[in-house]
Every structure is written in C-alpha cells, then in structure tokens.
Image (cartoon, rainbow, N blue to C red; front, side, top):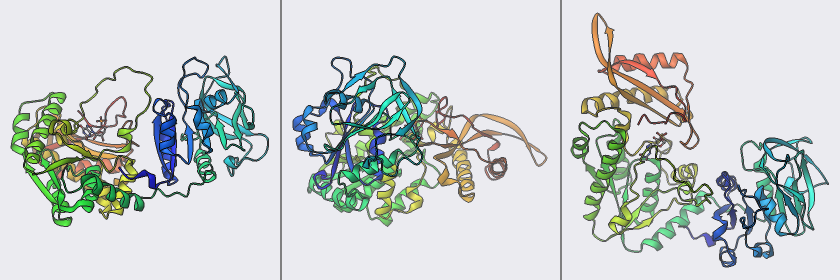
Length: 521
Ligand code: XMP
C-alpha cells in the first residue's frame, strides 16, 4: 500500500520456519521496514527490484543435505549487502559458499543451549555476551561441520561448534540459534547490531507511515468512492479514520447492527464516527432480520453461517446504493497476509467458521483498499493513537463478528440477549474499576442455557446462570484464564446477581486455550 521505495528495506527470505514472523516483529521494533518473501518467489529480478539494504535468511524445516532443498538465488551473495543467516539460513549460506553441513546423528539440539564466545570481537555481538555463557534457543537436526572460506567462528555451543560465524569483510553473518524468539533472552540485540551495521536509520515510524499511506490511498482511489464495513473494532476503525483522512466524503462506512452488540455499542460507534469524525456512515439497523433468522437455532456453526450470510447480504444491499463505489476498504493486518512456505500441505481442520467479509470483493466486483496490510496489531493501535482515536477506544478488547450470538449457547432470545448485555456491562465495569482492563486480552460474560434455583430475600428464584470469561493472550491463538483474586470474583458475582434481573448464579471459566477456545461457541 505505502510506497515502499521511500523506505530503507530489509528482505527476509523465508525457508519455512515457524517463527519467521518474529524476525519481522523484532525489526519493526527497531523501526526497520522489512518484507518476508518465500524463497520460491525470490529470483534475480526480484532481488534487483526489491533492492534491499540487507537480507536475512530465515530458518526452515528442510535439510540442506537433501537434493532439491530450498536455496536463495546465488546472486544474493553478489549484491554487496549484509546478510544474516539463521539456523537453516546459516546452513544454506555455508553450503552455497563452500562449507559443509552434516545431518544430525547425535548432534541435534532442541531447546535451550548456551553459547560461549570464541575468537575475539564481532560487531554483531557488541554488548551481547554478558557472561561467557549466553542463553540461546536452538532447534536444529543438521549442523555446519565446516565453515566456508573467509568465515571465522565467534561463538560455540556444545552441539554447534559453529554457533556464530561471520565473514566480516563481506558482511555475511550466520548463527545456528534463533535470536528472534523469546527464549533467546537478548536476541533482539543481535538484530539491533545487524541493522545498525547495515546502515539502517530506523525510518519506519507511524508518523511517516501515516503520511505515506494517505498519499497511497489517494493515488489508488483517485476520485472513486470507497465503502467500508465498520464493526467498531480497532482494525476497521483505524482503517476508516485513515481512509477518511485521505479522501473525506469519498468514503462511506456501513455499520451493521445485527442486534448482537454489547450494551451501548451501536450508539458509541455512531457517535464516534458520525458525530466526532463527520464520516458518512450508514447505520443499518437489521436486528429484526438477524434475530428472526436465528430464532430457534442452537447449533453454533449454523449460527455463524447464518450471521455470515446475512451480513454479506445486508452489506451488499447498502453498498449497492452508493453510486460509483469501486473500492472496499478492509482492516486486513500483516499477520493475515504473510505468505509463509507451507511444508505440511494438509488441510487444517475447521474449528469455527470465522465471520468476515472475505467473499465480498469478488461478489461485488470491488477492488480492495487495505491500508493496514503491513502492520501488526500493536502498530495498528499506535497508528490509531497517531490519528487521534481515544486510547479507550484503541485499547478495546477484541469483539467477534458474530457478537453475542456465540456467547449465548443454545437458542438465542431477546430476553437472554438483554440479560447478557446487562451482566457483561457490570463485569466490564468491575474490571475497569479494578484497573485490570489493559492486563486482560479479552473479557466477557456468556449466558448459559440453564436455569438454576436460588434464594433472594425470602423468595425462591429460578433464573439463568452465567459464566465470566477473562483471558490473557498474545494473539488469540493460545490463551490462559486470568487469575482474578477470589475477592474480585466474589464482589463481581454479588454485583451481577444484585444488579441484573434474570441471573442468580455466576461461575468463572478457568479453561485455557487449547483445549478450550476463548469464545464459548
Ligand atoms: P476463539 O473462540 O476461536 O477466538 O478462541 C479467538 C479470537 O477470535 C475472536 N473470534 C472471532 N473474531 N470473527 C471475528 O472477527 C469471528 O467469527 C470470531 N470468532 C472468534 C474471539 O473473540 C477471540 O478474540
């Protein structure tokens, strides 16, 4: 989206490591612009066009000793730019430059290892060895048995005699371990040293990103109209504000109220974007339609499918009314678009059909505007702050497309939704009051399809039970329950039962993901 020719660029050639994305992450933290490209896509012409200031070879699951295993184009070594090879990347570098790699046989290393320094100073390692044993994370079956001519050894580990090697004259560096992972505690320092040596000035900031993204949007869209599905979530909100800043009234946002939103949410979104930002915003109140079609449906996948289908219909209905709409804006993020080399090949199991508007562009013949394609989630938040969105809005917990439908196991009724909204509001209020909101990835209430007997005052109650959920997570892929104090839980249960009519029992869900999922359905 942005004109990357204006940035200093680093190229990561991906050989299929599970953690390649983390290399990009570490570089972003250093304000360095980088792109990950699978090795198959990188040929001489690509290298020339991309014109990187430095290159990193990722790790990968293959063995360089196998005929036909992945290679970068040989031309990469003639570009005169620094190269850092990691794990498989180290081995491929050695093999191609005249060294040797052998397969495992008792010298494999998986997990924590300690590297000791060898052979004097190396700028890549500046400040790195705090003691003579630095902890690193290894994950290799093969290892380098002979380094290529011109290379020297600067670090060794028990099973990797060539744990750190370099040909300083040519600017080639190679490490057997993974500096990008959390288990290599000071690994980020190696990236910092590498990009400094390569001459990066750190020109990848949100300020410059914002300016360039605005330019790029104007150029892409020209005088045409753009429509944007606004959910009120952080990604679509930041995308909408950015695009609005670029093209003003050429943008129309469609906010679909499916009747499955949280308390006060629709008003909040409409006030924020229509009143504060003066955006053209269609507030599509389609509660009757959605709740009508969901009536009597209790199967989670059926619910998801119905909501997904109706969402597209409704969006399309409103978008059709916007004359000259040629573009659809989406808040797609970098992790969604990273092409990684898949060696497994097998189809993965559908746990849940996630709701998105992915099918829309083709169906409607629209072109995509995706100004967040190059950003990680926390960078989107930083951009939101740069654009002046209030911190409370930017820091909101994720909310799923199907909304409260998947927090209401069993049949969905208006009564249950109303109770759920009230209980959820009390719970979130409690969390905010205790200053815990920002420590939690996501918190919500699920209303359970069961009534239980209670006693309030002198009377018998027969009301719904609910479950509180709060998890910590980095990316929503794995999660752990949040360790509230018993005092907090007790106080919250009391408040919900006292303040929300229709609930007389509160439980706390302490399932991690896996084996559970974050949402109940
Ligand atoms: P699960 O329940 O799969 O959720 O552990 C992981 C994260 O994804 C959110 N989620 C969704 N987000 N559309 C979305 O946009 C969906 O259909 C959907 N389902 C789950 C969930 O809230 C959590 O943050």
